[in-house]
Length: 634
Image (cartoon, rainbow, N blue to C red; front, side, top):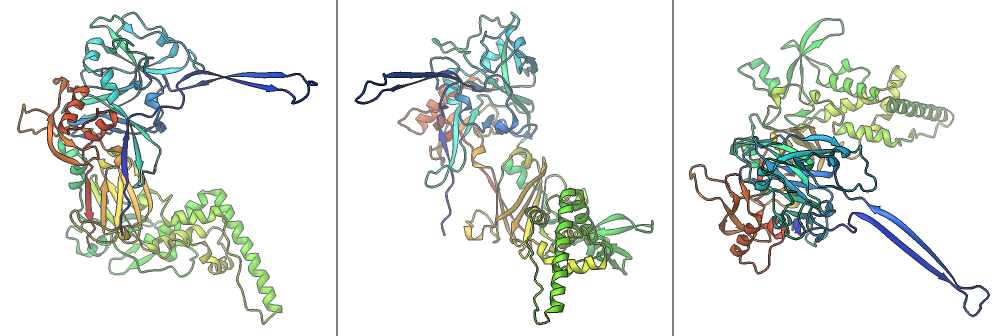
């Protein structure tokens, strides 16, 4: 069986259907009669005006930004990476232009500032932007429809002597914005096009770097192509509108994607605490139990065992019938004198979660009352028709009730401390595999179904209708998964996750017939990722999403100080090839790359007959996408 091919296509630009501005539409219609002059010829005309509102001054909202790299607030070895931002609106960089004579030029640029250069962002109103002081330069502009003086903008004031060293010239800007399109082997689009804007400056190791996405609309001279500093002196400030910004710290190579995952903690491989020589407790600890304080109903206090539904092994237990109260699910070990409250807690949690959802609780109660009436009517019929033996009732559930129990099946809405009851089970930079304890889930669902179960008659009716509330999709299937607590989760959003039912080592190929379906994938916090698979996962592959692969130069060898910075050659189809080029700089001390000259050297190195556009530049500048493989232990 062949695998489907997914690829990232780089496109030079994506022009909006209409540029920002005011448009007028004129419509004219002539009416006349054929073969008669009774009705004179008449002409009707209509003129309509509309305005196309492209983004201009307002800060970008989070829903517009797909991802940034290096990740915001992260620590990592990024000294060879060009910062970039990926925008969900593929036309955004070309909705305006840096000069009116060329609409193909992007109007956005990424500027990287080192800690000592970092400008302080200011939030001001549009009327204050118009009244910029003499020693702070910002061009005059005219309000567009929908704008008013009270609109809020974010600006940064950058000294001219710094800005002129780091600001990309016009030709570099053209090469730093492109579009990513994810397609299949038939070149059919699999997602909306994403716009990517690259920076032109490498971060400095050991420092905090701040990146600003700035607007440069009409800031370049239409004749010379140079940025218009409006006669500013070296120490004057140039005001720029900042649409987005983030910071990160460039440290050592231990914080790379693959380095973080290769050093991930897998001891133990599942969610369990070390026994630390405590033999009586070992049998419980090895099964994922933790000791918790337990207040008994009579007011006494003790310590009891609890384990989460994320089990160290596959459960063989089944809940055969509903229970009246949670205490019925408590287990007592006379050898240790301790209770196991795991399933009682699951039952009580299911009941509390459902009662907390008051509309749903009422709906379940009313549904059960209707079933009770149906059963009573059938019993009366059986008394008068002794040969009629059927006692089936209509088991249809409302969508809300069915969805609630299906969500509980996948442990949705279950608080984190029930899943990981002790922080030592999932320390930072750790990976833990697990089985879903189906008996724990049964108890959770039965607790949810217990709403309205008060009398013995209620319990008897629940016994007859218990099977109606269970999920019909996953109730009889094995579910396994993993918890990942790592900087990788926050640093690389949209991780590619692939789970397989076959244990595979190295870079061996795994067939799609062994690939498992992901049932649930959720971020439980910024750094914790939860994933469920339908089946037993034995091989797990984690990789960077193709559309968020970063661009950069070759890593610098710390031993060979003073050696030139190079870039390995990559063909336009994305495949690495032999050879490299020396990276040209506009200012090497500041890490500012000469992008135009870089494209010329890449073109010569690859012996390409065509001139490079931003699409070819992005394709040749991408760094390899590492894939890290984990094999679950038996």
